[in-house]
Length: 243
Image (cartoon, rainbow, N blue to C red; front, side, top):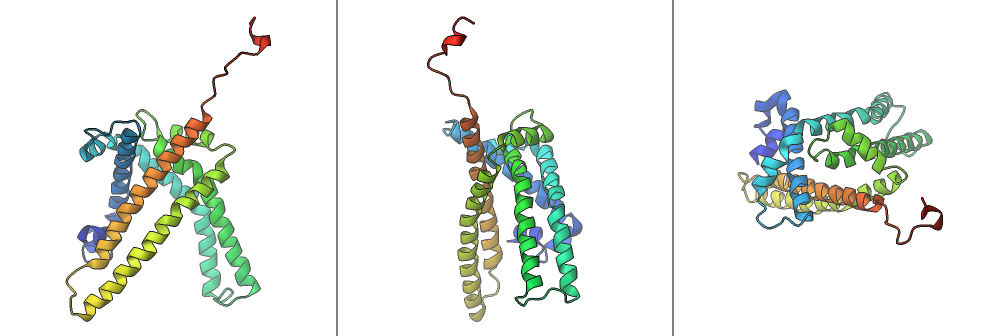
């Protein structure tokens, strides 16, 4: 609970980290993601026997700097959506856009939705590169180039798969976090305020979400690679026999 509060800044522990909290979050996420991808790769390759968590911790963290570069790339790719959000906030603060259903509000919501979808469409190769970069000797921008080639002519399908990945995560957050908040209200009514139920639920949800997304994206990349492998013809064409 203290660890979760330190990262999210929702408890007193976050004040000790201050401005370094996002840096700690990026480092821990990068290292945890690479460890998970390493473990999933070993299980997929049939090396489940004798596999331990420490193997992923020690073997998967070698590409942490490359992973941080990819996360910085995601931040750069999110700049257009951030600019649109700033414009939307500015127009809302001066009263041009409000919460009512009107033509200008609907137009603003359509622009926001379109920008969000286009930004995710642009980020698709970067999400794939987060798995490719875990391979030994692959640099971040080389991973981006490889992932970009993998996403050619199938970027929209991959985006649909990413949306499908997010649906169970969203349902899990709604159900578990909603139940935790409701039960925490009951605990407060019973004068039990010392048990941090909601932070523990948030930490559990974050862990499960990262495990689910890392496994899903790795299996998606593996499926794309297997689909791109050329088929061996059973019989050569007659014009190529002499050659």
